[in-house]
Image (tube, rainbow, N blue to C red; front, side, top):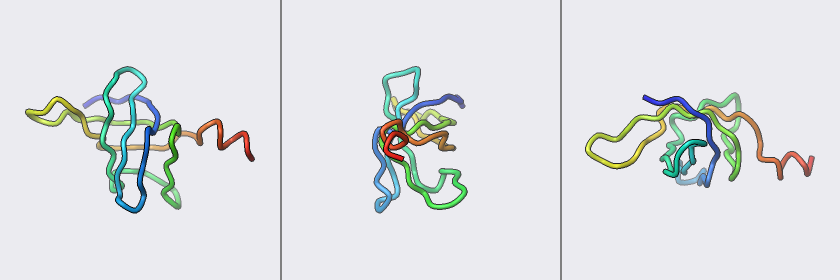
Length: 81
């Protein structure tokens, strides 16, 4: 398991999944809605910073997130407040 930070590349709430990109790496990581830790309404936005715990998918060249913790809203959202 790897613990890192990254950002949301996209997330589709209605479908319950999306992707994030770790700060150190060029892979997109699958995020399922069930592993997101939120204190309220789930709303991940493109560019939003997140803490990620990642697990390599056995016999596949990719990783899945096993825990996602939102850290902050993207700068574009903060500037409009």
